[in-house]
Image 1 (cartoon, helix red, strand yellow):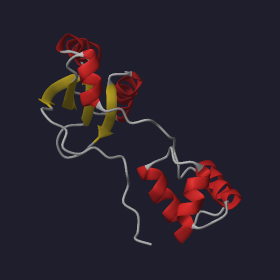
Image 2 (image 1 turned 180 degrees about the vertical axis):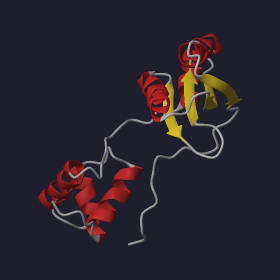
Image 3 (image 1 turned 135 degrees about the vertical axis):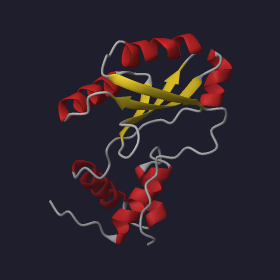
Length: 161
């Protein structure tokens, strides 16, 4: 499979990053290509691994109106032992937890940054018990609680076409 992306591929990826629910016909019209060509290219980009998956991004404010307050915490985690097996074990545990929206292994500071979403503070406490206090390898935790989401995007920067 060709690992190169052409201008049309980059345009497709750009449009899909903004709205992956766009129909094939609408996407083809935007790019001024035929629907079969568009479908074939999107399939190639998906099979080639450029498109990882398609998801629905929920609005936490609207969800909070229906379910009550939603807690978003950005959590710095430093492990006591930092061998590869310890880092991998914590990462696997964090990634497997549904409350962990994002897990980043970072350097120069904490070992991990987690974005944790919980329905309430008691739910957040349960997350900390599952991930942080039952594991003797966690040395330090620092949590920051979101008071407002100013921007949220999963879009990656692409070259201008």
